[in-house]
Image (cartoon, rainbow, N blue to C red; front, side, top):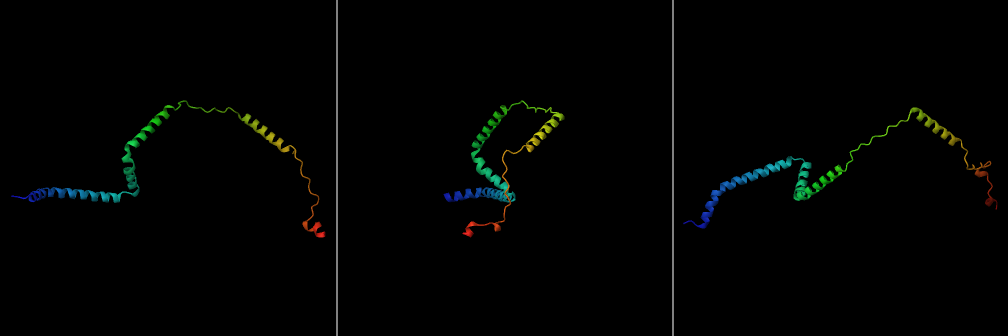
Length: 140
């Protein structure tokens, strides 16, 4: 009669070949992922890591934020006024422009020829050099 240990070891030997095959497949997949991770650019790897860390765990929150933005966009588009504003075409003629330019020139000439209302400071009468000035404190 077989002992329980022998029965378990016999069952394990039967499954051992299948378990070894599964281990080989898992190790091959890990090696493939490692080589693929080495080949991906750093920026892409960072973006994928960010996606896995921030977006995937909070999918419902991000979906809610996206839904709110869609509603805001729809409301803003519904408030958009469809009327177009047409710029008023100027009907001034060249003669009017010349007259306005002439009037402006005349006003500038009048302003330039007006006498100033502030009295000018009287010029100093023959200023003497400092070396020729008489100083009272030196004479005392």
